[in-house]
Length: 371
Image (cartoon, rainbow, N blue to C red; front, side):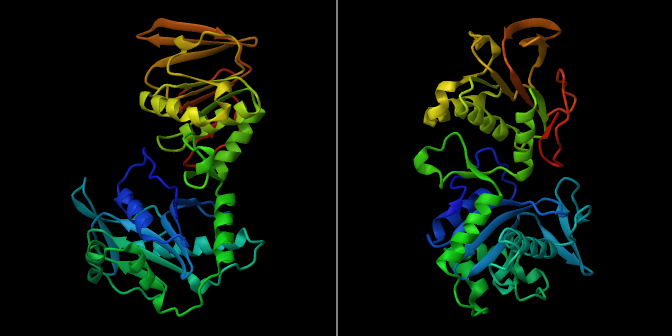
């Protein structure tokens, strides 16, 4: 089983991750868990993302994909920068090579599982392994790792193998450890689901809760808590930081509370996707999805949530308990609607966006921030 079941449609596929997502999904048996793009949030450690994590009866392995060219020159790892057309060292990271990166991910995962198992060891450390898949290098180009739990795979092995499960299983053969029990595997899965805050997206029908799991980080949940506590919020973050996920989840949560919600999605592609996915939600009667505020035809709503509206200039103003939505194009007033919203939340990529009565709630380095 792989989580999420479907490769995120908007994810940038720099490392052939979509291809390997499909291969892991097809090749691994049902008694194994494979997690894609797993983000670990560990105290006092910068947030780290792992390309793939395999949890199976034979053990646990973190896998890092490298789709660029690498070399080791005078014991120093370098990667080829395509734009600069030159070899460069790793700078500004807590690791100095793909090997140290993968090893640190393994250590963090071991610590993460134990921390969420009442600080006790759920799986002995010798069951944890790390691997790097080099998609454009041969394995022989690099020195053999010193640790028996660190493994390298080159493009030849990855291209010639017909089954990733058989390839990954080679990692555990020399360990000769008894297999992990089904109960242990399920406990690990529960820890990952609970503490990485998996939730289901719009398109998840009740029958598919386990299939379409996506991650909502602790930082994002903290932002939701901040939003709930204040009537006016501006959420900004870079592209891909999770703003649209937060917007959708926020609409669902308010709708579950019986609130009337206007969900304004300015991006055409997401608007049509969300329009289709809303048909699966029992809360859909409390959510009105719009692409333009001209579609607002009633005052009978309590919540406005706006996402993906950077392509134009909008002004959201407050007068008493009324909110006006104004669109400016070339400095000219185009649209104006006054609606009685008690709460509104705006999602923006630009930190220069302004929000009437904005109040700082919290911040999350690298992710969305609420004001």
